Image (cartoon, rainbow, N blue to C red):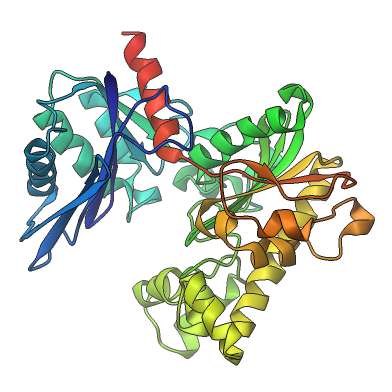
Length: 400
């Protein structure tokens, strides 16, 4: 069996999976794991393989040591690079700017182009590059492929992609809407036409990727026409720790009146805002328990979250003109029936009717949660970004 190694390198972590690109979306990957707490006094590598979970702990000074430990743990249990056939390595890269719209075979030149995009994603692209460099050194004879989060939204209409900022300044500094979670939105939206029994070129849909990070996309005939995240993943919906859309004047106000530095405001909006900023927690399971216990801050955070979500759904219905489907995905979207019900409550006049029993059914693959009479169909489609990356990497490898 030929497998694809998928790597998602963060600043202090590496998620990895060995994926059969021919598997179904709901199948368990051949192997998966996580390297975490890189650079901390003590790190941890976790591997899931053959129905079992294995863990090792040790200091992990850098990404190279982390990947070394991951491969060693995989080798101990018979699923390391020397034990299985790896056809290609697929790397998630957060920001492709205006340069990359498709997956790319990684070369030294491509790495330098990605490095040049660091100012657009200073928290993400450096970590992605570290993972690429380490993996290429450790697996030099295997093709490596970069798959970009922003790629799906590359060709959005200018009216949606551009901000109303002076042309010269915006162009010089790459200020525009790029969009993120593109691999997820593309993967999920490609499943919807078959669920509808319609030609993909005739389907209009809204996809809602709701996890700790959250984004919405309006997709017409398979092509995105708008998305909620912007130049950075901070924009749009209220998220676990990110504020989503705010009045930009708030930044100036905090700088002038609170004496906060730019870095402090950055930290506030990215890590201490959103649901966590209001309720003190960002895990929706904990938030749900707090709401059940009548915690007012939790209830307020939830209402702010739902209000912003409904605003984007409504605006995308107008942008598309005609809607065939609305689809929920990612951790919250797939598992929180209350979020789904409240996001689409009281929209019967717009042709949307949620079936309470279908909505409450356990998460078990792609399914419809709207009533038979609902003019606009509502679905839950589990996302699988790793499988999507694996398939794109295989396509590149097969063409070499």
